[in-house]
Every structure is written in structure tokens, then in C-alpha cells.
Length: 120
Image 1 (cartoon, rainbow, N blue to C red):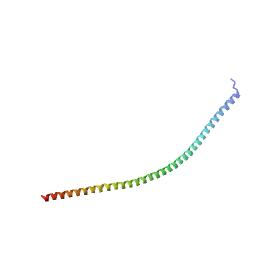
Image 2 (tube, one colour):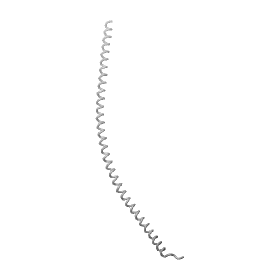
Image 3 (cartoon, rainbow, N blue to C red):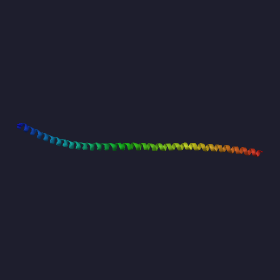
Image 4 (cartoon, one colour):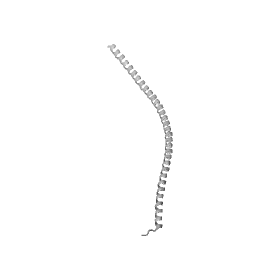
């Protein structure tokens, strides 16, 4: 068998070209991975920093709202205690008045009994 020298050269060139392209492809993919990782890291840092700022702003607003609600609660608690105190005073005054009225009735009954006893 007689080999064609052109075919051998073409095959050798094709093989070397294939090896070179494979190396170029590997290098290219490795560089793309590095660039992709750098971009992802930068993007993650920026996104995380922005989320941190948003969280801080939101947390500050939320704490301000909570303080406002707590101040309302304190005022409502004070007003509620004041109203309950007024109701308690009215109830106590009514009970005292009822006792005084009953005592007056009882006293007049004793006087009536005493008068009846003295009359016998």
C-alpha cells in the first residue's frame, strides 16, 4: 500500500489543529468561568449591599411605626385606667350611698322598735 503524502500531511495538520482547538477551547472555557465568577461575586456583593440598605431602611421605618403604636397604646392605657377609675368611684359612691340609706332605714326601724317597746 502506497500512502498518499498529502493525505498524511492533511491528517497530521488536522490532528494538530484539533489538539490546538481543544486547548484553545479549554483555555477559553476556563477564562469564561473566571470572568463569570468575578461578575457573579461583584453582582452578589452589590445585591447584598442593596438588600442590606433596604433592610436597614425598612427596619428603621418599622421601629418608628412600633414606637408610634406603643405611644398610642400608652395613651389608651392611661385613658382606660382613668375611665376605669371613674367607673370604680361611681360604683363605690353608689354602694356607700346605698349603705348610708340602709343604715338610715335600719336606724329608723330601731327607733320605731324602741318607741314600741317604751309604749308597752
